[in-house]
Length: 213
Image (tube, rainbow, N blue to C red; front, side):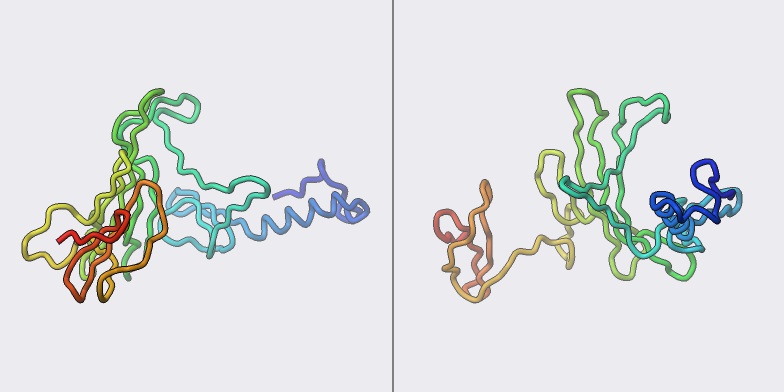
């Protein structure tokens, strides 16, 4: 890559101007950390390292930080239909995914995933979306549903209908050894649950602790 002489003084003189010195240091630091490689006609952009792992085209070493000052930092997973120059409305599909990926000695499978799935085709009046959680059970290679937050805000735990002999897939709540007596913090529109392992009862707090069985 040719040094950008049009925007900076000759190398022998660039330290004369503080702004030009900062630009030089920035560009040097940036290109020391950015690396481009082509593997089997696919171009990879690697930041902070010189080798690629797995098949993602953009790879960052160790960690990625999104910072903001006097505003909110956020990470957006954006999807549209159509093309970059001609958008079309998002269909009922997965619009974003966060994966935990590991190497198993052969390839890089996804071990767990959080997916943002639309429940309808989007338009100006309807953008239904839910959040799916997926995990891989120990001893398995198949990623499976571990529950979801419905587009209505309802929480669905586990994989769904369980066999009567099932040993996994249940919803777990806190326990206490005896009848609960503390006054829980208030979370508007919700009530706490706890199971008494001494009296074998489940309690809900509704102005006071009430046994449900």
